[in-house]
Length: 69
Image (tube, rainbow, N blue to C red):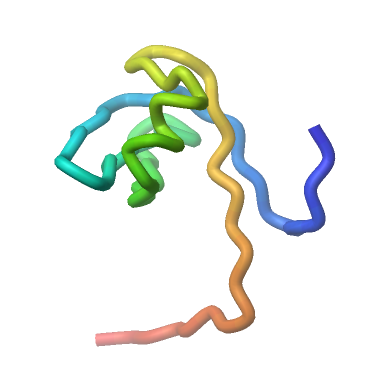
């Protein structure tokens, strides 16, 4: 796999919640660390995502904010 995004994280699909149009996918990239993404239902089906399978969280963003309490 080659992508232009600089940040890709390999992990395990922990949870999939399918809605009418979209799917919420949670990928555990490290013990106790998860990234959640909303993708279309058809994309989730085309990728064949299943809980327990390997997947990549690919992050492409022009801005990353930092905040403190």
